[in-house]
Image (tube, rainbow, N blue to C red; front, side, top):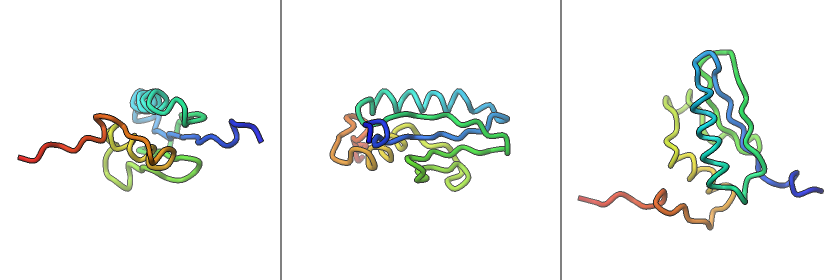
Length: 101
């Protein structure tokens, strides 16, 4: 089995009618930059049923705009992906908890 077949793959399905390609591609870039060693690919999948924005890792749903009622913050998304592909890995400032008043 090749290394490509065993590396995780992220799929971002976005509504092309809503104009969410830019958001999807930015999130893909962020994931590929942060997880350059861990991810095999990030695929952008246009959808024309309206309002769809879903992120899956090897078929497992990580985020659904419909479920959450919003888009993920990039910090949330990176943490979700990290928890699946490299749970022992820190994300630097993205893991820092806000200071308590």
